[in-house]
Length: 251
Image (cartoon, rainbow, N blue to C red; front, side, top):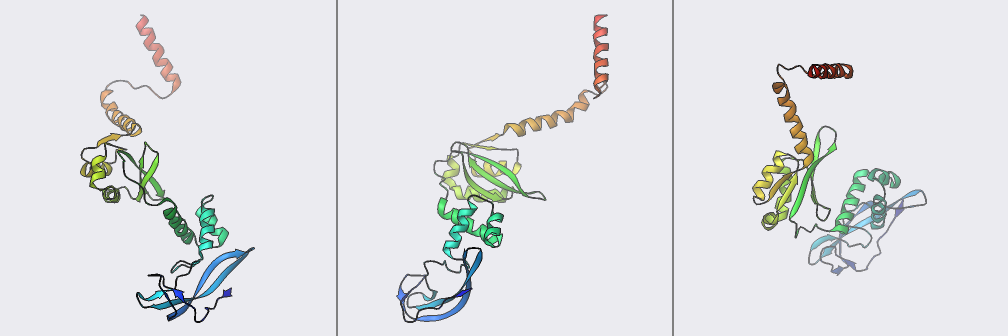
């Protein structure tokens, strides 16, 4: 543990407007994690100053190496983000001795800065699908652009209200621009697309169409074969039935 002390009488920069001032409103100690030294964890005790900014009022001092309200230094966050790019969040958390939720937030903020907001201009065809995220039938929805092979949006749930934020993000002009939407036979997806994109063609994927056809065929098969002998699943009985049929045809 390393305790830091502020230098007296120097000008400090406001985190709000960027102006400099020497007036300090108050301060409180904060424990901040930093990069480890060899295999030893390093924790800094930082006197976090609130400046008496003449423009903004009481505001935190701007520090180049520490984000406002952060509990880890920027260089530690950058190291965590680099490790998350090649391994899982859990392994990165164990390596640095951090809570996995903290690592998740670091990785999320890093991806936001690196990727920026998604560009939805020019999107004319999308595909929607659901995937399981946890045990107990908990699902999320992903929206992709097949033509450019990129993910446009991911959200929890698969109900109409869960996927509505994507169409709100797309906006009226973007919804009008959509020509086709590929999906499984999810009624919620279908209804939401027809509400926001009435001119877009709904295309059901082949797997679910074939699966539905198979289920419907199995449902009507007992009615069509009523009164007819059904073949057993036993191979010897099937061969015997076939041979009897061949003999009857020859006679």
